[in-house]
Amino acid sequence: MLDLSVFSAILFSMTVSGVQLPILFAAPVERPSPVAVITTSGGSIGPNGRPTSPAQLAHLKEMSAANRGCRRTPETKQRMSDAQRGKKRTEESKRRQAESRRGVVKAGPATKAKLSAISKALWQDPAYQAKMRLRRHPTQGLVGELNPLFGRPRPPSVKAKMSLAARLRYEDPSEREKTSRALMVPSVRLLRQQAHKRRWAKPEEHAKASDAQKRKWSRPEVRAKVSGRNSCNWRGGASYEPYDEQWTNTFKNGIRERDRYTCQLCGKSNGKTVRSVHHVDYEKKNCEPSNLVTLCVSCHTRTNHSREYWAAAFQMIQVTRGTEVPDGV
Image (cartoon, rainbow, N blue to C red):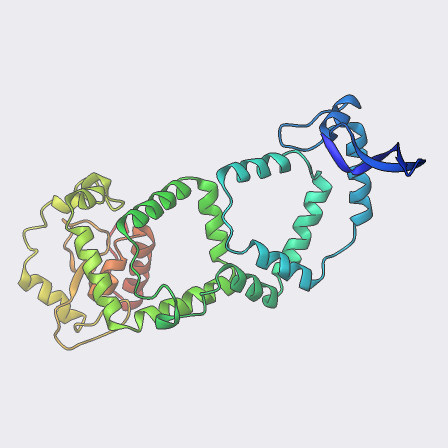
């Protein structure tokens, strides 16, 4: 390879009018390439394009030590950012950059702990949280028509890809635990509450959610996942067992009149509105009046879970009311 920056002086002579005059002529001299220099000095070029010779590595370390502690000015950072904005790296460029970074810097446990402490301290500052949130999601504060994505529905292929990625992520227990901890942060909970209020303040959102639920539960495979033995409330088929012979509408109305058509849990009363009659010990065959209480539809739904707790609660209600408590409760 010819290096035109280096010349050698070659002396020529010429005769002008019988007088011999010396002339200096600058001729290029061939120098070995840097690769050849590195190779001949005991090193070589690595697969990622970084020199591995001792001399070159020592030079890089000296440059790194000299630049350590130097910070770029905001103007320089902005210029570098503007120069890179909009450029798309090729797969080959990404691969080479990953290989160049792989194994170059290995942080020890002490360094990792120090960096973690610094990061946690920064994220405790609400101003820093707002700054980073705005940097990561510049359109987060733009709601409705102000958002550039408003009115642009995602194509089915994008929705399918997002759904698959979410399912694969949440199959990992550690990811679910990480998400749960993140949602418990007060600032995140406040943002979610505000977003939900803005959403459910619109009547069309209620209609949209209702239609989505109807479409979901109209699918037989969805109902099969939570029906019968697959249900968390499965009690061995107890719901199919018949009631006692005296379990008639007349008998149930007598229990409602006894309780004055008032829910025995929340205390609500709406005249002679039909109320649910609940078995305290959850035995459908035990229709003793002392084992029955009147509940509203909402409270009766709540008693389907934590049966031991509700049985003890109704026992206290019966004792307070002075009614005989059935055996086994």
